[in-house]
Length: 141
Image (spheres, rainbow, N blue to C red):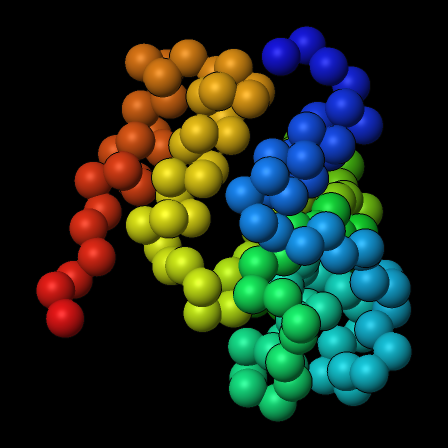
């Protein structure tokens, strides 16, 4: 896939909408209702209250392109900003979320299909994803 970042974002959203996900706009970069966060630093921030069981949504699946700001914290690598090609202070996080509708196995399969069929990554060159995810099996029970 030799498309622009805009086309990649749109393909991501379209793929997950076709698989029953509700497209949800990016939340604010400065969270309005979460005093524990100075900035939005992850795609799941806007769903925090859903995951904590404090709020529910009219949908069980969501897809987002969330604007984020690298501001330190758990994976504090601010000292790398500007020195490497992958460390930026502002970035967008593409995410698909399930609120009890599907779990790790399905999420991995969605990701694999999106990357190999929609984006066009070669399966044989995507060994890391296959090794990390496709061998995972849901525990019995």
